[in-house]
Amino acid sequence: MQKMRQLLRYQKIVGIVLALLLIVGAMPAAAASAADAGQKSQEPNIEEVKFWLDLLYVRPIDWEKIDDSSVESIFESLGDKYSSYLTPTAFEDLSTRLGGSFGGVGIYIQQVEGYVTVTAPIEGSPADRAGLQPGDRIIKVDGVDVVDTPLEQVVSMIKGEPGTEVELTVLRGDKELLFNLTRDEVRVHSVTGRMLEDGIGYIRIHSFGENAVDELKAELARLDEAGALGYIIDLRNNGGGYLTSALELADVLVDKGPIVHVVRRSQIVKTYTTSTEGIDKPLVVLVNKGSASAAEILAAAIRETGHGILVGTETFGKASVQRIVGLSNGGKLKVTTAHYLTPNKTNINEVGLKPTFYVEGTEQQLAKAREVLEVAIEQAKMKPAVPTVQLFIGKDTGFVQGNEVALEVEPFIARGRAYVPLRFICENLGLQVQWQEAGNTIEIFGAGKKIFLSPGSSRVQLNGNARELAAPVMVRAGHSFVPVRFFIQLLDGEVKWIAKSRQVNIFYSQH
Image 1 (tube, rainbow, N blue to C red):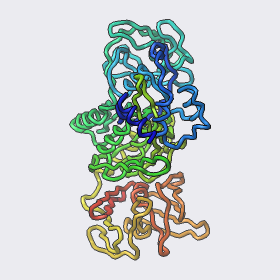
Image 2: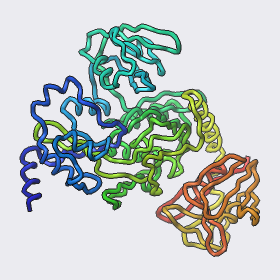
Image 3: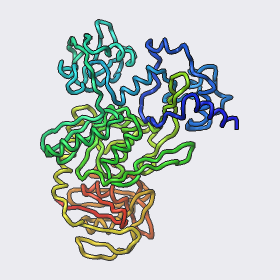
Image 4: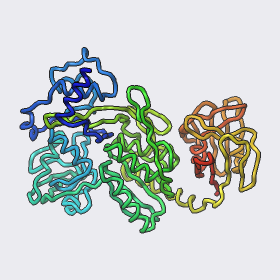
């Protein structure tokens, strides 16, 4: 009853949770800036903060173990770097990062080994027109040394009223360059794109802001019109954004099915699914250590639904969701309310996603992505109109090249994956299968590939290189079964799942 009275009181003061800013980003709580000094005259009410944390926090809080003498001490005691109190100015800065406009020079930046480093200039911005490039390291702003200066402080020095000037000194390699820039009204785009050679569309998702899905659809339409045959989706250095935005982008790109499972206080409270068939073109996704949270949700969805391949390095590994709550003093709470699991219910927190092709170096990663996508585009051109193999979950009959055949064992669903009999699949795709009893392994060879699998394991050797299936090989009734989508991808084939008829269509051609 007491909590109900508190709830009613705070509803009258601030309205219910400002919700539904559900944030899945890797931006830790930033120290308050000098611009916030005037906003500290009215500190947040401690009891109001404790009320919202009790109501929303991802796990129950034992207040006897929390120093509640101040808002800062509460969050320090929680030990959660993603939950924090935001002054109005800090919240405005966060919102700008996720879409909007501001006075500045138009660059995406991150801090790398003490240097504020340009990730990319915003197309058409003062920085773009002046020739700033990705990798440029900003060492001075208006003559003031900013090496080892907090990122937020450097941002505040660069931003300013449109029409005013700012001088940036940068290091490009070993060369020091000076740029005199006139600030302008800069529009922050979540998504940009361009055509590369050989029918490759390149789409960079900078953040998961409010307008990201509209911008993605516009870029896809423009690049489709320009003749794109497949897409590189670049999620490198994307720290996340709104959960709703990640779900909307997944709905555009991948087939129907689960995208992410949200877990609160050890219980799955919501499974989000897509409602469309996605795009019917090959995808390759670029990721690195700067790809976090919402970016990881989308990357995992694309890979685990079999819609694309990851290239780059391991991702950040942030699997928590934050919600913004309005307080009566005008400030905001950013509260961790849940964790998420990938479509196949994997927890990537503090682990991240491992790419299919591990490549370091910005240009080397893009080159590898192009190479992988070019192969996928060629395979798509050769895909037969009729599936090579058609199987049905729970049925002992199927089709091979359109002819009905009997199966000794039935395909089944486990761990959210369609499993099919390994020997049946391989032999009907023209591959040979041998059981190596000494090593408890299965050897598959043909079409220039040699694959080794082990029952109970998801580890795979493909032509001497270690790979990983999304789920382990299983044994039932003396037969080995594999998760079909990921196994067929090893063979450079394609799988289409038809949910209504619980049907697996496999497209494959040896070449």
